[in-house]
Length: 352
Image (tube, rainbow, N blue to C red):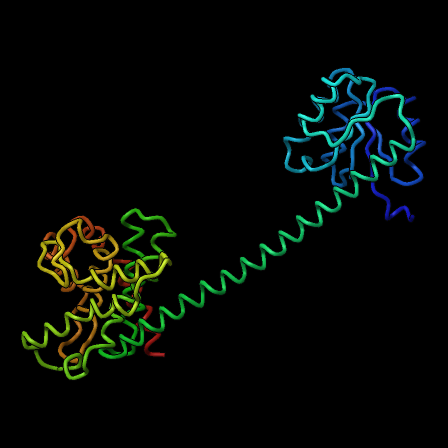
């Protein structure tokens, strides 16, 4: 066996004779490191090249082997290094204490060369197998994580494209769904949701008008005011959207369905399709409603010109406690600088 291929064994004992005996047994097959105290043993174990196995005496001054083992097993870097006690303490209680602390084996002094070699070889092989299995698990975990991330990205892209497909029906380039999703995410964060929750609402809101796919162009693109009957047809897009999304275990799709169904509900109970009132309306629906109304007001449609930001903000403020959540509206108004920044960004992109 080449020196470079040898496993390393740390022998810990405060008596030089014992060290010499174990070195004589092991040095032909392993690289032997030596520590004459518990503190030195811990230092070697935490070095840049820790040992592959530790042969540890129990009875040592200052810090006995039990304490050394305890400390090794509580540290992330050293907890998996196999520890074999080599000691004259041979009572059952002594062995039980060692195993309870995490020792791999127990050898009684005076040691037998064949037993030492056999035990060391066995535990090094077990250690290697465990590290190999851990490596395989880590590799597989990383692989699954990558696949999961790819699936998540694909799902988000499908939702984004489906949302934009619906928006292409009745506004400039389908950018409404993108703009309002950013506004929704910003307002969600402002309302105290976590980054993860805000991100989920941002993506789910892209599907808010997917039900428009089921509405006739004669009504959806009508440049004049809708008749009461036509408006009743338009209102159906919320329930159509809910049916298109359907029922799923995915948190994203569950939230998408909630938003599709409830973004036209009003705080005062005069919205549709269910006439929900106040906090009976899901929070995601209330947040999306504000972003949706603002972007709809500031966007040009077949039946209207785009409103100035000032006028749109005033309308949002006037609807607090009426159609819109009175606690969320002030938060949205505070976001005006960020809202205007998003609008400028999309305007610049549209001109390029």
